[in-house]
Image 1: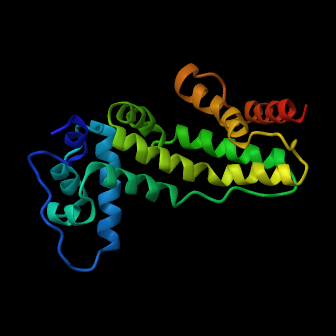
Image 2: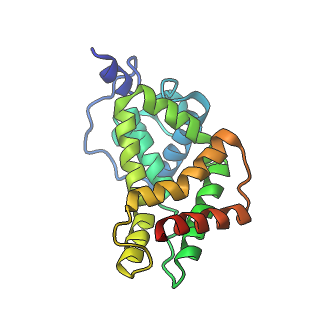
Length: 207
């Protein structure tokens, strides 16, 4: 068995049974499983994630978890998407600068939160070692960025940004500083700094 296939199994000693029709899914069980998966992932990382521990924390049987998620990647991807489902929409007002400020402030607050921010180092480590998780995480990030990219694309259409603006690069510039200061340098990320970040990003592109 390859290292990749070994890593994608929930636990080599706990092979998932065949999935049958089963009983109707319980929304409460789903929520408990996904919350437990996030907690276990944050505490033990990808390789340390175990079905028994997740099931015990969620208060469900292991068979309940297996019926829903046959491997670690499926489980963690669902947990991340569940967290994303509470994201408010990206604003689209008459002020591009203010809308971008809201986007970067939300990102700063997310990185600083216990819910998602503490997972970032674990996510990066898992992605560097397990290609199947890295692929799932890229899909999640692509979808999470969609609202911001659409707002920038609309600004180009409206003439608020030049036609040759690279939408992806623009967003990388706007949010990259948030990531760097949150997890690398620890430099200031107060609201005044965020306003200046947005202004300088816009200024650089409008020139």
